[in-house]
Each structure stands twice: as C-alpha cells, then as structure tokens.
Length: 504
Image 1 (spheres, one colour):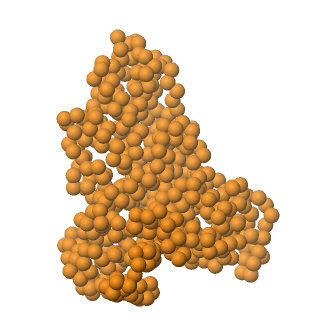
Image 2 (cartoon, helix red, strand yellow):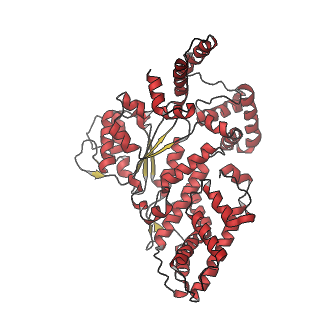
Image 3 (tube, one colour):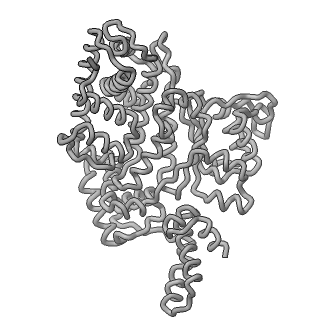
C-alpha cells in the first residue's frame, strides 16, 4: 500500500513546487492552477498590495485546506505503519513544511508588526508548541522516517520567509510588470533562485555577497535596500527561546553624499581619539556596530573618494578593517548593500571609480524601474501611488484627495509627463497640489539646454542623417535615464552601442 493515491501524489508534487517558488514570480500562478484545477479563481499574475486589498486571495485559503488534509491523512497512515517509498517521504516532508509555515503565519506576522511598532522581535512564545508540532509530523506515532530536520533552523527560515514577504509586499507597491519584476528580483537577492539550496547551506554565506542597487533618483532604492537588510537569516537559540538578534536593529543606512571624506571614514570605520582634529574620544563605526546578521546600506556609493574606495574594497575582499588612527584589525561580519544613481561604467571610464571595486559590488545587482516605465505598463498605478501618499499625509481625506490630484495631473501635465524625479517628484507634486492647488515642475539644466528643441528643428528641416539622428536620440534618452543600460533598454540597442554613440 502506497502512502499516496495517484491524485494525492499529484497534489503533493504541486504543493512541493509551490512551496519553493518565488511568491512574486508569475510561475506561482501555474502551480496554484495545477493544485486547484477548476476551483482556481483566476488570480492576477502580478501579486501586489493594492490588488490584495481589493481582491482577497481565495486560492491561498483553498490550498491551505487541501494541504492540511493531505498532511493529516498521510501522517495518520504513517503512524499506522504504512510503508512509503523514499520519494513519497520526500513529498510528505515538503507538504509538512508548507503546512507548518502556513499554520504559523499569523504568529510570525504579529512578531513583525510588533517589531515595527517598537517591540524587540526576539522572543518566540510559541516555540514549544512549534517544536512539538514538528516532532509530531516528522516522527508520526514515534516512527522514525529517516528525515533530517532541525526545528530551530526551520523556525529561523520561516521567520525569514515571512519577514521577506512582508517587507517586499508592503515596501514595493505597484501593479505594473516592472514593479512585479522588481519584487521578484528582491526575493531572489534574499534567497537566490533556488530556495532548496538556500535552506540547505547558502543561508550561511549569502551575507558575504554585496548587493548593488542602481537606478535614477527617486525610484525607491532605499526601500529595496531596507527590504533586503531587514530580511536576513537570523539563527534561533532554542535554550533561550529567542532569536540571537533583533532584525529591526540590524539595518544601518549611511548617506555618503552628505558627508565629507573624513566623516565618511569615521562613520564607517570608527576612529581613535586624536586621529584627526575634533576626534576627542574613541568612536565605533557602523562596520563594527553592525551585527553578524545585519546590513550596512551605503547610499550614493558613486560619490565615494578614491581613497575610501580602496579601504572598502579591502573590507569586501578580506572582511577586515581598521579604525582611523588605529592598527588593530577588526572584522566586519555583516552584509554590504550599496546604491547609486550614477552610471558606474561611465565613472570607471572617466577614472573616478575603481573597476576592481565595481566588480566586488555588483555580484548581486538590482535596477529600480523609473516611474515612467511603470506608468507605461500600468497607467492606473498613478492614482494608486497618489493614494499611498495621501494615506501618509491625510488618511481621512485620502481617496478624494488622491482622485483630485490625479485629475489635476492629467489635465495640466498630461498622461505622458516623464516624471524625471520619479516617485519622489510624484510625492512632491501631490503635496503641492494639496496645499496650493497646483504644481510647477522644476526645469533641469539638461532640459533647459534645448536639446529637445534643437533636435526637433533639425528633424523638421531634414538636416540630420540617420546616424546623427540616432546619436542625438541616444543622448536625449541618456540625459533622461542617466545610465547606459537604461538607455539601451529604452532604445532597443546594445549598451555598448549606446556608449559608442554617446562618445561620438
């Protein structure tokens, strides 16, 4: 007698696929459809906060019920001594993992929300119950199934999964495919594309991989960094019934463009008293303060002085550093997340950015989409993003206020306004219209140079060759996007071709 009949086996196989899938990838829909068949309710491929707020996900509730039934029945049969093939035991194990995560999702969510409200997120009051449930399912009736399991590691992984989902889901909003791709990329940055491998071993070393976030100003690079930094793996101490660190205390953002080179070194590496004028006492820097499972976020990494690039390169290579004015070697145990709106390839060509430092930074790279890209794919997101701003500023008037500002934008700026300041500009536009009833976009120096107008005149007069037109168009798009890669994406050209045209 087998552990599963054919229908149950197909269900268990589909649950195993779903359990290890990226929840923000469109493939998740395929596995849900395979599990539910005719009961699948047609969920959207883009899983977003505003979609869930208006359309509760019925598929999740149905899958939870099916999984719970499958696990309980299989567990009872195993307890009765039914023989099972190794492949069936593996499928049973995957179904149990899915079921337990789903069963404790509310408790994990409450811990996360309490942490963001100011309470330490370390004590786990349900640890004993969780441990008993793990033992009950993995040794049904006291029977050893040959499954290797560690309840403390399972709890740590579950808490990390839930934190990652929470921070990606609530920080990165939008229904556009561009926003969906960004959420999926962030999930992979935290767990890689292979969650099984991550759980087995990669969770121990992924903190050594630096994440570089690129994109124009105002596109939410710090939100991406915060989602990654607050979602790191934190071990659980079973003897004390608590996690070894508080995830909310482990994220340290440093805006490098706001500091002088000396202050940057002091902020990052710390200093000894007398190391420089004004250093009246020893100071511990963020690299030393950062816990083993925390992260330091270096915003505007493209602004760094060359001498500091060398020092940070050493940190990334050897994980060691020295305080200013000190010779003692200290170890940096955390993760580095960096961000820039500069085209670092162009900065390397100009001799302002070290190539070896760049390649240490870009092992894991994420590019944030512009607001214009998102609105091109999903125009209705404009009003939603305005609603997000309205709920922060005037929650009681949020919906009518957001609709009013959206109407003003469409009337005065038009649906094709480029939003050069991206989401940050949209937020300022919202505040201006709310207060003054109008918004006047800032005219950038590049726009004021008349590049658009001169090119338009040359086109009307038939003055440009095809090659000259392409060169000018690349320059215009690059001025707007700020990077070779984004320009290449907009024009459909290879980035090396874009670089060549701009050099010409």
